[in-house]
Image 1 (cartoon, one colour):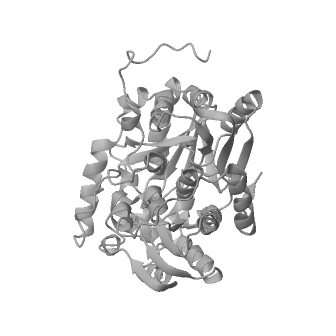
Image 2 (image 1 turned 60 degrees about the horizontal axis):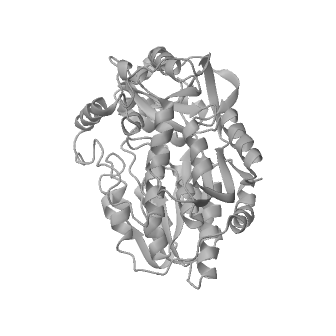
Image 3 (image 1 turned 180 degrees about the vertical axis):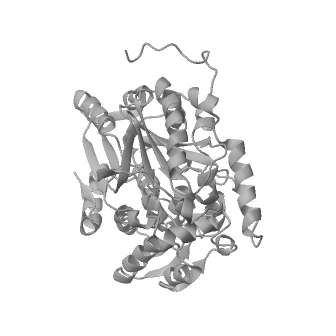
Length: 470
C-alpha cells in the first residue's frame, strides 16, 4: 500500500535536494533565478563554470575527458539512487522562496520565460519534475539499447522508494555529447501533487490567489519500458527531429563521431506509437491534484499550453513591452537570452524586454529572427548565446546570432565571452548577470502585474503562435 513503506534512511539523513537534482538542469536554474528575483537579488552566485569552460581551443579528446571527469563527480551511484526521496526534492524547491504570502503561483514545465513571467507577477514558480544524472559504468554513447537496460535498473530503484514518480529516461548524444555515454539522464515527474507543494499552496498564497499551470505540449517517440519508466532516444531540445536519430541519418553519424561514438553500433529500441509527451511534459495526475486542491479552496486555475518554446517567449516579450510602456518606460531595449543564461532581476532592474531561446539550436534562433523581423524595432538588442558544449549540425553558427543582434537600431551587442570557444565551451548562469549589470538602471520597477492582465496579454501575444491560455 502507498504510504506504508519504512524510511530508507534515518530522519534528517540521506541525500539532500541539492545533491539529487542535476547541477545545471533547467528546472534547478529557474527556481534559483526566480527565488532570487523575488528577494530582489540577481544571479551572481548562480551556476558553475562547467566541465569544459577552461578548454577552449583544446582538442576534442581533451575536452571530452574533462567532461567525463566532471560528470563522475556529480552523478548519482546506484546506491544513491535508492536513497532518492522525491518529497524531499519538492520541499527543497519550495524552501528556496522567501517566506511570505504571494498573489499566485506558477507550476509545471520548465521554460526560461516563466522566470520573467513569475518576476513580473511577483509569484514563485515550482517545477512538475526534476532531472537527475546517474553513473553508467562502461557505457557507450552509441548504444541506446544498453542505456535502456542500465536505466531500467536505476528506475526500479528510484520507483521502489518513490511510487508517485514517473521516470523518463532520455538518451540524446545530440544535446549531451560524450556525457550520454558515461551517465544516464532521468527526469522524475510527479504523478501526484507532492505534499510539500500542497503545504506551500496552503501556507503561502493569498486568498483567491491565481494558480497557473504551464504545460510543454511537445511530443516525441517514447517506449513505455515498464510501469513508471519510459525511454526516449533524442529530445526536442536537440534541435533535431525524431527521424534524425535513425541509424541511416547523416546528422546522427556526425553527432556520434563528434562524441567519440561509432555510428555502426547504433541500434535504438522500438518505440510505442503514437508519440507521447516529451520529457518536460506534466503528468495528468499532477495537474489534477492542483485543480482538486484549488476547487476545494476557491483559487482560480488557468492552464498555459505551450506547443513550442517560442510561443511563450514571444508572448512574454510582448507582455513585458506593454507592461514597461504602461509604466512610462520605453520598452525599447531587448535582451535575447539562451538556455541557462538569464537573470530576471537584472532584466527588471534595467527595464529590458526579455526573449528566451531554449538553446543554441538553429531553429530556435530562426524563430527569434522571424519574431524580430515582424515586430516594432528595438533601439538596442543584446544577445547572450549559451554555448552547448557539444558539436551538432543542428546548432546555429555565430553569424546567425550576430544577425539577431543586427536588429538593434542603435546598439547591437553579442556577448564576447559566450562567443569565445562557441559552441564547445560552457559558461555559467552568472555570465548573464555580469553582462546585464552593465546596462543602465531604469528604476523604479513597474508595479507587479495583475494575473488577469497578464493572462489577457498572453492570449493576445501568444494566440497567433499557438499558445493556448484556458
